[in-house]
Image 1 (tube, rainbow, N blue to C red):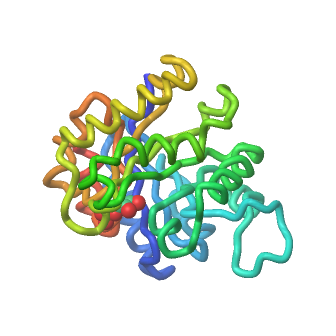
Image 2 (tube, rainbow, N blue to C red):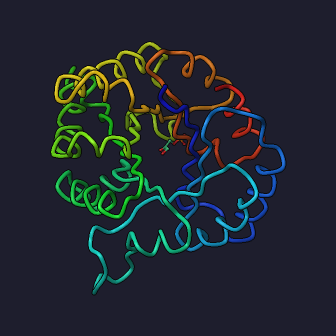
Length: 249
Ligand code: 13P
């Protein structure tokens, strides 16, 4: 059985004080669940966040990392730095990294390889822009993102991969993909992986949906067979909303 996962991507939100407060609320209110619960605070607060969740089942994950082992990369963070503070999972390829920070498929592939080399788990994000969907090119775009990011990996590497389909037009816009659109794409993603690798690998990988998931729509989206959870932005910044989304799974 593949894991169910609810992950909160806090993006560039929450000071240290706010991080401590939100994590105290989350750990206090966390319901009993089979799902893995993850939160991704900003780099500067990761070490404190790891301590904050120590006695709970919440996992603290990173929003990004550099592909180099170390060296002259001012402002960047390495895999070893994450591991050393107890962070074992990293988000790679978020559309905001692609759009605002020039992260190409080639750079993302290097990051994924470096992360896996260090035995980090990778939450790989991808998804089409509105124009792609309007021009009926969304399946092509997604299959290229999968191919360029992941299809050079050995089959055994896939146990360390989580996928997050995040249509760019649904991120922070309040407009979610319909549950049917999410299911259609997730099923396409699984088939694409099965064609490239095996059905077993495709069936074992968790595929999260991201893009304006809220307490009001989470249950319906999560009810789809190929949707294994969510990568949550705005609604992860409020404890009650995030808890409600966890309960929805
Ligand atoms: P929103 O939930 O705010 O749309 O953000 C989704 C997202 O980008 C998570 O990574």
